[in-house]
Length: 194
Image (cartoon, rainbow, N blue to C red; front, side, top):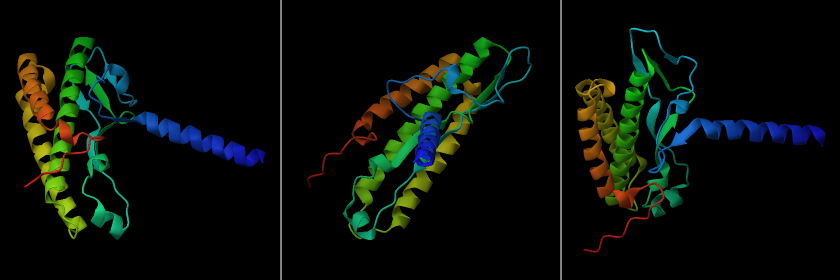
């Protein structure tokens, strides 16, 4: 009995630390330096800078064929997430580090916008007899758009060093994000009546 409780304790310890590592996008949460937990992180007395945000779009679902046929809303299956233990930044000083954090917050909000676009497209196009290929095609298309636009934004605003430009781009993303509020992870979209 003692061995079983020890194993259960270990399971909860590891599952809890895993859950603490994954930071899902949340409208009210703002990133801080403490969210970058990789040992590769370094700030101060450097003449270089690097950012690895470890932000991604994840698409996870496991269901029977019948469940798949009956499911139209995949909002909770598509998440934007930051892997804290993989995220790091390298900056010459604290001010620069905060500019990189501001860009990472922009990236996180942009990832959620792309997740909402994927959710909406799937909601509109998935029919009872659609197969999983449709979902994968939608996801792949928007993920590629996310990657391409993000690299363009990173270059345009120099990973947040061009503060005014980053703020302008961020405002645009937040406005667009609000236009897709029906497709947040926990939302249930209204049914189209034609």
